[in-house]
Length: 355
Image (cartoon, rainbow, N blue to C red; front, side, top):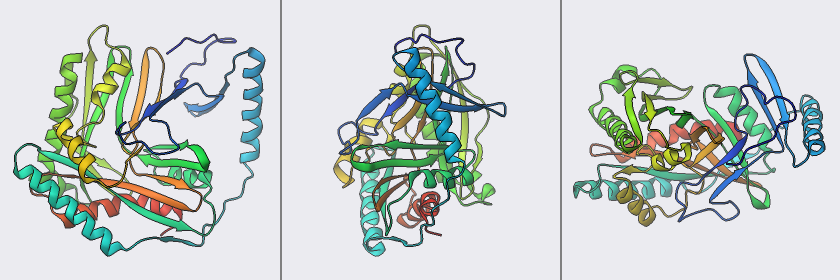
């Protein structure tokens, strides 16, 4: 990443300023979206210690100041924008056929595991939503932000009026210099089922494989990989997950992007072993994940923060494709994994106007 020349002092605590990431599988991108993108924004806003900051960028000082003034003007206008009621939104397609298709995919995954070549597969499915009106991405974002305050809320623009939007709980990496934080997030239950999840042999096994997979990936790049705490619970408004925070000291000379590329796609979104899992998904999932389960965030030459783009939807005019997934291991059932995907979908269904 190239350096920048600042007009005045560089703002302290500013994220980025380079933004970007890449898709889940570069062999299967979406039309109208890049496989990987990194860019310097024209305008940037962030909050720190209760204060709001803004910065403009440009090839000249005048251009940067122009972008900053436009941002301030746009923020003032946004404060009086009225919400738009989405009154005619509905699920599309035949749910029974979707359920049968999901059952076949889970069955194929379990058969593959019986052969002993794969320990875990993370399967995904689509849910299609229709609207009589064109969706307003800003309105969807506001709903996600209001309900999922502890998640990463994001929106990415594609060609032809497409948007990719979501709210994810999972960080891929936070790197500053040689210090890194990451996490294992695998194993799911409904709210209030803490004890059952913490004593579920299947979910603990799935979670342990994700932890061990992250450790194996990071060992060649690190001086130390430390589990900060025993497996615990990460709470969301509609679900709970098993969670293990991980702290890493990277080897000297290891670049942040090098680490992130080694980690993604992680065992939490693809499977174990990675290459065998990716081959299965390319053969068995009938749609492209595109940016779903990809990596997105910000960074510079010394720092990098990327999250995993889960609980998301691709919106094109009056149709939205929701993407949700579930980890399948031996002992999984089609019914329980279907329930998990339906629960995960509630985040976007609510934001798109379906109660």
